[in-house]
Length: 119
Image (cartoon, rainbow, N blue to C red; front, side, top):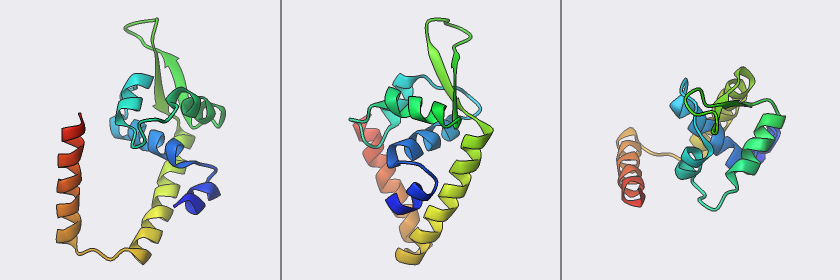
C-alpha cells in the first residue's frame, strides 16, 4: 500500500486523515476529533495536517462557533486525490486478497466491535 500511496505523494497517515475528513464531510473537524479516529494513535496529527494544508488537500479555518478553535475540511483537490488513491488501493487489494462478500461483511462487523471497545 505504501508504494501505491507514494505515487500520489501521500503517507499512510495522510491518507487516513483524508479518509476521516471525507467520512465527516461536509462537516469540518478539529484536530482532537481527527486524532481520536486515527488508526495509528501515536501519529502527530497537527504535523500531518500541516503537510496536507501545504499540498492544498486540506483547508484549515476558524470554527464559526468558537474562534479559538481551528477546523479542517477536504478541498476539491483533496477529495480528488483521495478518490484516485482509493481506487488504486482497492484494485491492488482485489488482486491480492480474495474474500467472499459474506466473509468481508463479517470482517467489517468484527472490526466495528473492536473499534467500539477501544472508544
